[in-house]
Structure formats: C-alpha cells, structure tokens
Image (cartoon, rainbow, N blue to C red; front, side):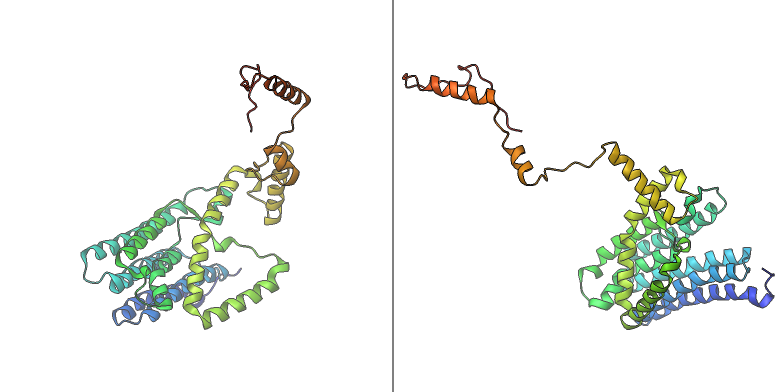
Length: 325
C-alpha cells in the first residue's frame, strides 16, 4: 500500500480527538442533569474509539503519536468522564463517593498502562484473541449500567442505591485491572456463508438501538458480562492445546470434537448422577434375589415356624444382612 498523505494520516487522530471530546461532553451533560445525553456521549466515545485504530490500519496511517493519543483519550473518555458522571449522579458532595470515583479512574489508567506494556511482551499466538481484563470502553459503559437502568426502568430502585453503586464501581474497577481474559472483537472472523445473515443482524441491531437505545445498551452490557466465563474457558482450552493456535475456527472445532471422541473411547464419561430410567432404575433400587438368597430365606421361614413361637434373628440363623445399595 502506498504511503498515505498528510491529510489522510490526520484522520485517525481526528477521530481520537472526537472520542475525547465526547467523553468530556458527558461530564458537561451530567452537571446540567441531562443523564441520557451523558450516556449517549460515552457510547459515542466508545464507537469513535473502535473506529480510529481500524481506520489507521486501513489507511496505513499508524504512528507512535496516534498510539499515545489513543491511550490518553481512553483515560479521559472511559476513566475520568464516567467516574465524574457517577459521582455527580449518586456521590455528589460526599467524601466516600469521591474516593470511589478516584479508585475507578486510577484503575482505568493502570489498565491502559498495562495494555501498552504488554504490546512489547512476547505472547503466545492465541493471546491476540483476548484482552487482559475488561477493555476501557466496556469498563466505562459497565460503570454506567446502574444509571442506564435507572433511566430506562425508573428512579428509586435498588440498583440506584448509594451502597450498591459504590460496590458496583469497585467491582468494575477490579475487573479492569484483573487478569481475566476477555474476547477481543478485533479478531472475530465471519465466514463467507454468514456474511448476509450478519448484515441482516447488524440492521436489526441498528433498528433496536435507534428505537430502544437504553434497553439495547442494557442488553449488550449483560451479554458482555455473561460472556466472561466462556472467555475464561476458551482461553484455558487454547493454553492446553498448542495444536489449535494457528488453525482456523473450523479446524479448532474439529480438534474439540476429536478430543471428545477420544475421551469417550477411553471410557471417560460423565457420571449419571442417579438418572437411570425405566427397568434400570428398578434394578438398581430392587436387586434381584438369587437362588442362594431365596433358599436361605425359605430355611429361615421354616425354622421360624417350628412351633417354638419365637422368630429367630438373622444372626442366630447364621445369615448376613443384605445391604441395599
């Protein structure tokens, strides 16, 4: 690709500056009580943040200045701005609330610093499919989830309580600096046969966002939180299977199926946990009496009915008690 001109190289950095301006505008909207506009400004900053890097790579306009500017914009748009919005909304004029807001902002900056340092550290090939911890745009939007629910459902619910919002802020801050692997959307590849259905899905998603913006954002955040266990499981599986690092998704699924077949051939089946149906259940619960047990029982009955009027115990008969499974 031919080197880009000065005007083209300026475009990604301009989008980054727009993301920073959107984040700062969210603080302004929060100060005047326009909470919906504040949420929309943070969401717009997330969209701009997802576009600047891709456009820079497409136009061959990546630069060291752009990388540094992107980190600074993320710190402002998804660290400082959401923390101030939450502080103004729920923690205004409280020392404890200010401390909680500072914790979130500091964790966001630490998360971005770690991300920049990991770029220079050699990682396994599969590590490029994951982020270490929750990324900055997702963390900023997750922090606003109680406010989004409050705007959508109504004011005064448990989700808007001061203690709950404090605990929620600390939890999201811990997710930012955690080592939990999260899926990277940048590495998702769509097969050719799914391009048309994918475009239809994008159209439906756009219609939902336009019609029900807050509800769609709440659903997106809940889905993101729900994907964390799957992401951890996928990361651990890839770490244990180096043969799947450099192959396509179809081949990875074939490797998983092959391992599943091998496990079944070795007899490594999951326990039934007592779920045995029909005759098998009756056989387990009521073991069949063999001929020896039947003869012993007849002998016991005969001795018990010998006219003495006393029924002898099983120890006196020399029998062993049958223990049910």
